[in-house]
Image 1: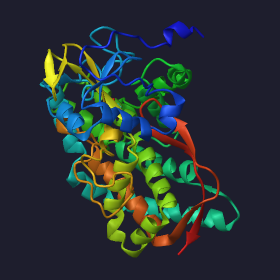
Image 2: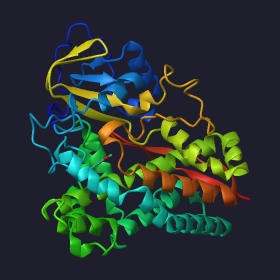
Image 3: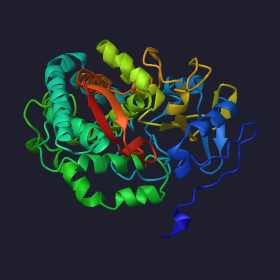
Length: 412
Ligand code: OVM
């Protein structure tokens, strides 16, 4: 492999900006990011990472400030390391993620209507029943002598069932959604070996994804078809519809797979907290919320400055890339008392795991529903989740992801 293409660009550090010499994309950082996050927060509200020639925010205050000034910190030049003003995006830009007002506003309104609290009321019973039947099947398999993997058999299986069902995607080859998500979230980082490897299978996977963005492959009445209905109504063009469906298939699976996986790992690692959940199932929602704060699925997103600007005392020139460490903001001691403590009673309103501002996760009501019903189904039938082997991480340039987590589920 040509390593020259893999080595990050270096640029002279701008005067007066604290320099933090970390590589947020190396194995060590991704395996255990929290000490480096502390270092980034300590250095200042806005710092410079020389290895990639980028500004960085890791404090809650600065991440919040960036997300809530969408006119200065734009998304249209990409929300990964690549600056789309200077290089061609590797795929056609997302109409919602990689867009700014006014075009963003139009796409956002359609997705927000489809992924609304009203929709959640309609899908809730099905999502609950699927979670309960999955936990029941896992207990039966365990009784028959099988070892259960809380990632392979649960946190990957559940979203791959309920979400594509809701979008209206057929049953065959759904694991492509995981391969695609892994690649997409790697692609927000540098063109390192991790991205190259996940992109090797990309041609057939991308073809499968694009085919499942077409109306004839989407069940009438599902979330995907509802996008085409918005096109029928003239809200977007029929050319734009498949790209908006692509956002469901890009952002809707790997994020919740890891949100749920990380939450189960938190429960296994903090049995006292899981016991509280078992004693009071109404803690399922706050427990999932705390897991999102404690181990945020999406660790980073970028913005690009649309003009010369000042941010918390630091001058940033136009067309600069800024990485926001959502996961670091979520453990900022300036924001959260005892931030490294996992406490399901915390109710961490204002956490950054779903972002904030006009680009805040449009699917968060569905993500929260999935997390809540899975944790509730576990609490009903499983009194303890015991790790019977070391959980393995799946390193990804953007996601805090898991590869496997062998467990014993102690029935109630
Ligand atoms: C999209 C998209 C892709 C990945 C993530 C995301 C977290 C959105 O294609 O719109 O939001």
